[in-house]
Amino acid sequence: MDEAGIPLSSTVDLVRWIGWAQRKAGEDWIRARELSHEQAFVLGYLSKNPGVIQREIAQMTRTSPASVSSLLQGLERRGLVERRSENGDERRKRVYATPAGTELISGFEAAMSDADEVILSPLDQAERATLHALLLKVTADMPKPTR
Image (cartoon, rainbow, N blue to C red; front, side):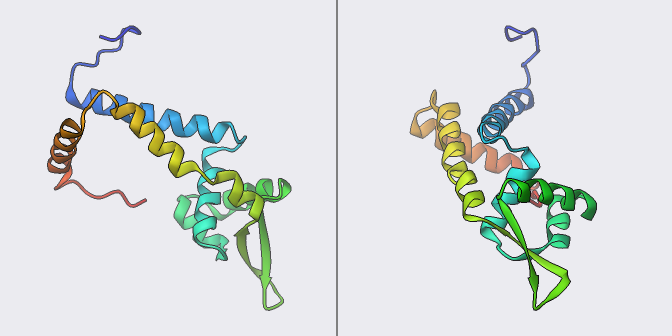
């Protein structure tokens, strides 16, 4: 058991603990920018896929169009996204991250890489390679994540 009394005896428990540490680092980074997880995800998606329609965002986030509309309204109020009409058609708007939105979430990948480095710091390069090879073997026949 660890100090909090949570049993961490199985390999999968330990892998979950690593995932928790990585997720916490991401959440801390996002929270420092006063964003929700969903807002940060959408900003990241828009910075890589400018000009998508709301329906695509709903599909990507696996949520309802109404939820996406509400989320985008909050980001618009902060000047982080903008919706633009396409060829004068007010019913079909494309969504873009503004420069401020793109800047706000820039550095996320580097922050997560830094968190990975901290997590793996007890291992030397050979141990990291072994761990990587073993995890590839464990996950080889598992369904791949969809996002």
